Length: 371
Image (cartoon, rainbow, N blue to C red; front, side, top):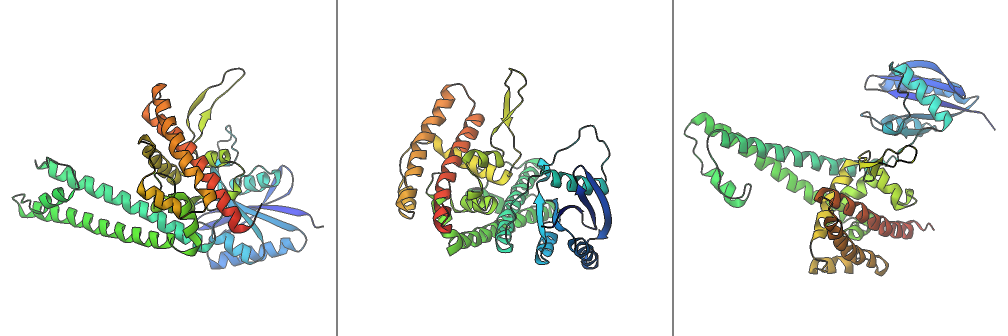
């Protein structure tokens, strides 16, 4: 059996720095390569030299450069993993940070087993995830565009007495005459931007819903939509970000992964818990909290929920109904104990995640045939 050498790569837009660890606690700098076709080919030639005598284990941090380099290395027969940057051990007293030191640090920690690696989606799943994420970007742009128009009108003394961004509000905006050609043009540009982003957002919603209706996603989307507060778009955010629920042995691991568990600072006999860690996926955390707000309403199985339950298998129907009753009573139990609404909603979102994990584990286990 050949010995294993561990390689750390510090990957940036223009350069790749490589370091190699041959023994515990030590790493040697190999070289720096340009992050382009020519540079990557040179790097692979160097790896081929090392692979003649040793088995190679390669890793680099997740970052803006994505997974392109990892896929190139995997296609050349190498094992390459992506480390979670937020979980890499840090030396508080070490105030010097360079690309070379980062590469050597990765190689040492990889050999020591101190790195936590992320799950990398395949090309198709990553494309779907990018589409779902881009919808959030458009939604934020639309929100900012509406704020700009609203502030513009208020600044010039125009106030709408009703609810903003309703049909009546848009009709009022269309009939406005600000008394100056330049102001009217400014109003037109602001309004036109809102209309364009609204159409773009609607097109993206239709596209994502069509993806959710495909064979690959239909079963998962229906399983999640059986729960109150979870729609198709929310389900697609959860599915595209979590990717595989079976990689979490229990719901607590998934809760920690999404940063929805309380932080803790305990020493000696003192136990002190604080706000949630927020160290995980912010997109899933956001949609879970939005869904949790729905459990303040009476636990009645609506016509829509009944229709959604009929679309899933019998073994997946019990958890949504149990969650409907438990989370509603839990919501008001926490409020009556004196918890504020924000803390209560986060607690409900955490418990809802446990129910979602339970049903998705059943579904994915059936689909893959795993026990």
